[in-house]
Image (cartoon, rainbow, N blue to C red; front, side, top):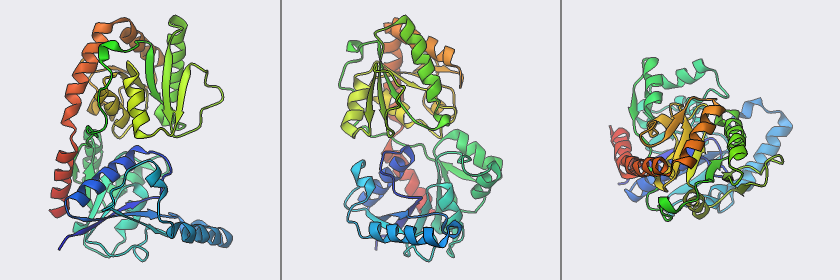
Length: 357
């Protein structure tokens, strides 16, 4: 008899989110392995905080969404027909059906899963970042000590978990090599064409990237920034940004392949999904030295890596890549070789080992 596993997600997302992509990749692959897989979306996480009228509105929204055949996730990720998606009012145990295993996918769902009256051997915690933007550092560390089977996606997160005396199994994410491919030869690319992800969160460092682009533009007026985002184009973004809101997978692949350089300036990242995708597609990467990016980006080996928050250093790195075609090609080619180590088949095998341990 097949075993069932439920991934507890904070809510549905109408646009692409890296952490959700990882969960969905696991869901599809585990379903192919014969598991009964469920994606459980919460309509709210903080029911008790709302007024009576707000609770009525939330309940009405929940009932409306509950009977929809498709979720908003279906608009941007190809969820396997073998995976069932269900909606619950909250991730509280009383609302969630019974399964063999449960996976908390974020700090909010970890707090709920902690209180489930089941053995900890049936609870997993997929840790994809140090989620202290809504919680204190102490609260984040507390979740690592709940006694669940902790899984981390990067070395620096493993060190964070172990620092508070807990154990974590390191399982690096994989990449979709079946889709993301090099279709435009590295040597044929326009050196003044840059790919860039725009995000509204300060921690993503987009202000650093934009300031660096402005400096490079002064030297090379022909610069073009191929931009993708889940958010609308800012009004103050100039027309030399070719902006794509909510691109599909095909457009992602096109953007990476039409760009010679990929730039990312995050202050903090759990990992580096777009950096890896860009490497697969043949971009030379210029990025900051946050711990997530350093899982794959090695300075002067397969990327140019600069200090976090340093727009001048980032601009200089971009100029080096524009002006030195041999360096750009060398880094891009090396990155394509190095990124192959991040394989979803390997990740899924390790995940199953933790699941069944």
